[in-house]
Image 1 (cartoon, rainbow, N blue to C red):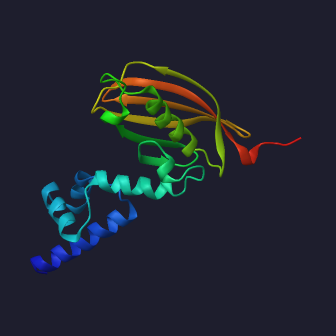
Image 2: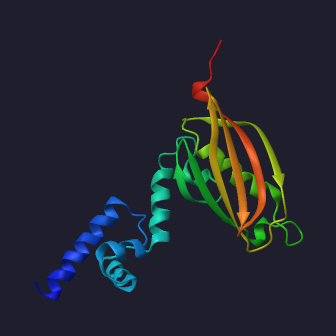
Image 3: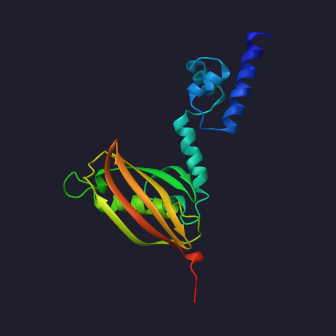
Length: 189
């Protein structure tokens, strides 16, 4: 078998592996294919497959379609990971339009990012925030990117308790517990 045939087989195998699991890293793919990471990167480029970060974003966008409580344009921030009924992650870069008179971000944007992510992960067609307990730990500044991570802690009937922690880098800037009611599961007297 010639070099050209080997490469064609490797490209086909690479494409199949990424169809089965788009979240494989280049290192993992290189190990499984028995080639260098650079070869995997070149092969991906040749067949038009984006890098892991973009593939992860595409997977999150696809899962966002499963979010029954919100459409994509109602969520504050860019959803980067979402498993409806379980967890989600979003990112929000702070621009000048989101600042108070100084270089500090308006708090309602940080809250809205966390709250909309908490509502989005609830597996229900309609949900609303009944109660939240939040804590701003430090101000967010112009240009910083806040990554919010939410997960469902407990579900009891129509009530979902969701924990959200927001970071800038490794530093926690916001945390909260959200009590989200799934309106379709409310018992009516």
